[in-house]
Length: 348
Image 1 (spheres, helix red, strand yellow):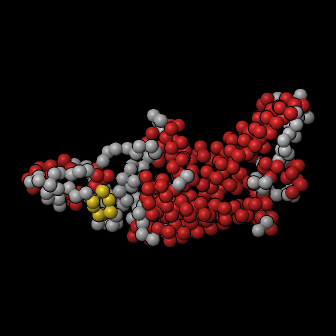
Image 2 (cartoon, one colour):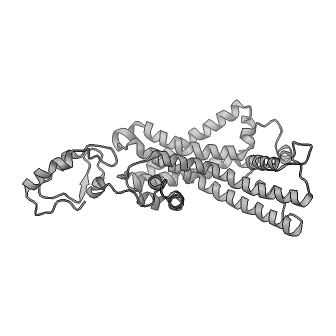
């Protein structure tokens, strides 16, 4: 806000004060009531302010402004859903720039961010299902009939779509699973998609939970919980971006293979090679090392550019380490409860 002109008299400010004080004026980071600071103004509204509670330096124009963010999906998901979603996803690819563009004074609308996170969790499966369906349809056209592994009769269109969903989930065919891994290994530790979702979903949520529950976060840093929820929700989107990109490559490869069948009558490459190379159950023990840099990168950018915390890198490193250990421990406990702990440890 440009504020009251510097030539305004004290009486003008006094007369205008009730207008400024008829609603809460809160610190963007900790929520401390700043109306006392407004009452101390004499001749003009300063451009910069400092919260006496948490020490945040802010612009008074952002505190008083009612303007919405120009492109963030949580503000524009009703009027411009596709455009705002694509713009948000593009910005999230560069966490530091994304959190520099989102201000603490922007009100948090948590619901739309949850829908975006759920969409990103489902998108890898959707992309693989499209690719697998296209490929199986091509096989059906080539052979005249196609028989799923669980049926004794030729498949219908519904069977093909169900088989594509099964292939998208399992990544490995039943024969490959029996070849590479013992049949008594539970599905949880055989299906990479489930484990990828576990770390991609649990890690940002656990980081946000650790941030809120650690007493020093609330006593010294004084960050409102809604800001942490915003970081955690968009963190799921960020963590899923590599998996969505990989699923897109796999979908394209399967469609190219299907086009090769339609054009030449033969496959361009083996059906399961696309799945076995990038994601195989033998890589599951290394997944925490894959996700850790992404988790740290995201929270370091958010703590520095968005929350404007001192020692942001140290805070992000400690949160990433603590939440990562909890996520890893949770997966090991689940695997042990299913009798697969020894198998998983052997893969280390």
